Image 1 (cartoon, rainbow, N blue to C red):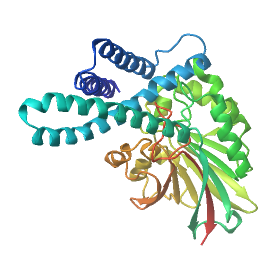
Image 2 (cartoon, rainbow, N blue to C red):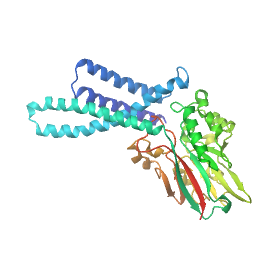
Image 3 (cartoon, rainbow, N blue to C red):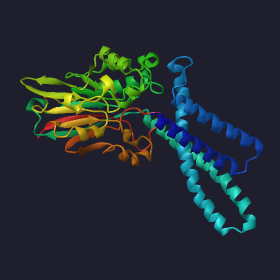
Image 4 (spheres, rainbow, N blue to C red):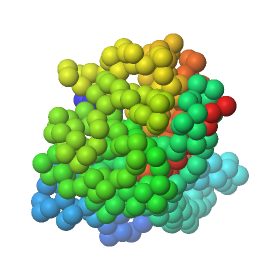
Length: 378
């Protein structure tokens, strides 16, 4: 985790320096504008870093949430600013090649003065669009068929709720939106496949209170994700889930019954867990080979250590579908799939893009979703 933070800080620092060069130095603005833009860049970056490190502790969580949202959204603006300004440098290179040497400096300065504001508007527009997109998780529907599914469970619907990331940015109002949309879909079963929370328990406990209102005749189940481990209060969060009426699958399974027929829902702790929260697929899937088994694991990659153990369908999240383009292109470096359905080492896996966001409350080319999976016999 420390190595990740150091790398992230280095990248953010270099990104800020690049923006300063392209937005302030290259256009040759007057001194007062240089100071103003430089100060704004440094202030926004510093605020984003402090927020990401959990440093906004004044007032209540509701007080700091708008500030955190703006600060973290700046990271997306900075990303798209960098991409846009990098693209404009191709135009600058062409101008440099065709312009006489004595005229290059003023021509390039005018070019940069035009393209810098255009890049800024484009980056702000894309981020604003992504913020609106991220605020509206929609119900999506898919079907999974298996000859192993007992007849009594044919047409059973499962709501896959993942990656709420309740905490610094997403409050109880967002959780309420998700709960209302899940309940409106009237699923038979609800599974929360990790990263339900993304902040310390003491300050952000209230954010998930609406989860107590989730309704499903076959039950509501949850497993931990990597961000539960990062909060430093995993045990408290798991205890709170139980208090809210959620059955926590701690490397364990439960039998679901309809009439004389049964299936199992099994769940494993996230691979980032240690000690009592370390993942144990053997324990989670023990005794499940004789029944149709839904396996809840936060990360799709867990299928690679769960093949040949009786898993009929794995339900996962974690990837966010990349959340912000072009990060979807990087997900395959860590996970065997980005979203949707895939067979991983013989294990059928459905991976949701998730309902919430990590860090910036922004999604671009990776709309938030609440999948409803209909199980069919066949």
